[in-house]
Length: 260
Ligand code: DAK
Image (cartoon, rainbow, N blue to C red; front, top):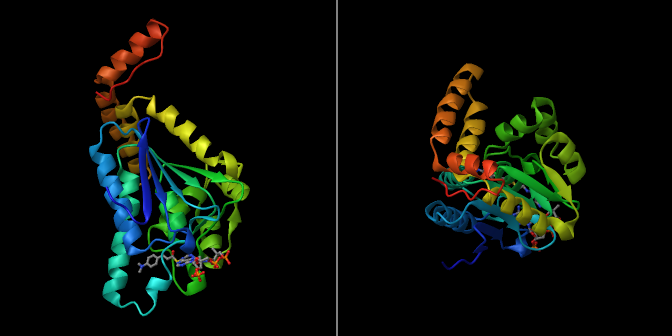
């Protein structure tokens, strides 16, 4: 696959997508989004990939958001197209049946934070900063930020961040629940890789079902969510991987899960 704006790598059952437009702080142009979507399609088809890392190149930014320069003179049709593409990108990451880790190597602003929040887990470098800064250019978050940020931090903090456009540092983001952990910048890639390796060793069907249940459960009643969990439990309990897990426990060895 030939990419211009991302670097796409696969090794040890981990796919890594690196946004690679450092001169524009990895801003999401139409082309960047198209390439990430293409990589996600490949990841969906590749049974050998069990975990995904999304990060940015350079030391300054994961992504400074949607490409502001491309918005100049944008008409309604183009704005609609951009909105649909961003939505598709975020939903593709969220619904991907494999765990996705965002490794935030600097600014995650506007659409950059929205994309990061569509991933399952977020690791931030100590130097990273996050914000829904759209208000500063007269916009609101348009790729799910008003909703996903609210689900992570609650309405009070979400309103503060969306109304003021102020940035929070990595430690504050961790306290608020926006990121799972903060690490020194030079340890970010390795920490993301180690976490991905940990996930790769787990039972893929169990992770896939747990991800779907946690995502769906946030939108429906507890009763309905518990019913879904029962069904999901049934599916996971019928896998060969459960038998392998039980056998490995009994035989005091590490399980080898096959995703079946
Ligand atoms: N888009 C395009 N280029 C960007 C960019 C962006 N979002 N952010 C930075 N750049 C470019 C800069 O223009 C500069 O390029 P040159 O001028 O040198 O060619 C280069 O990256 C380096 O940036 P700076 O020189 O500004 O670097 P500083 O260290 O001084 O400042 C900064 C870093 C991150 C504080 C600053 O660059 C900044 O404030 N950037 C904008 C961040 C921002 O507000 N992001 C939110 C974008 S709005 C929609 C749905 C959703 C959205 C839009 C529409 N529809 C439904 C239609 C989403 C919107 C957003 O994400």
